[in-house]
Length: 233
Image (tube, rainbow, N blue to C red; front, side):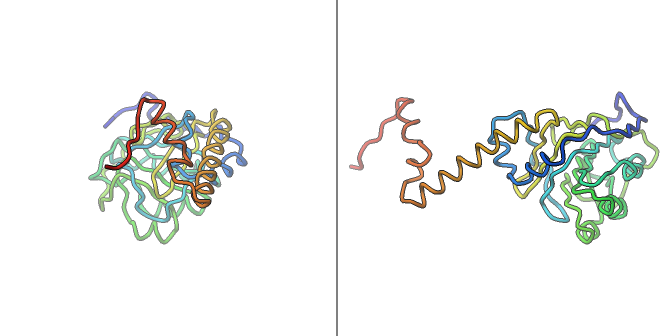
């Protein structure tokens, strides 16, 4: 839990967002396929889970660092949100002081925010459901902490044990969250498509009568590692 940041009290208004077409293309793939791609992606820790407003997120990150439990810079964040963005808040993992609720949530949703990720606590779950803001967070708590700062907007942050930079693409679904560094998005898409094609081939082979081991080539992998298969006694 960090109570300071090298860029605290900073508001960076400019985010270098990726090509929207690439973001739209990434949304067609699941987090599991992206995670299996072997590409330079990071998988957010399981402590951050879906709590409200749907489970599908895909968009460039607008980041907020805040002293754990403080809401000052969270209240400023809606000024920096653009259509399709994901608001990512590094709240230091604190679970006994919510840093965002349905008033800010409704405001950013109206501006086109496609999702909310909070390493910390949120509140007003029913309200976040009503405004339809997909929300992943560490926990829920009814009270806030303080509104004195410090904080920072559009600076590097950490959520769920991984680094997120402004403009990185956050993808969330019922299986969890992954983060794709903006500069690697095109390469990640190419490798993820290959995963999806491989999975389709497996399903088609099984539907055609092959065993899963045959479809995936597992028997060959076992054999190359010295494994043997003996008949039942």
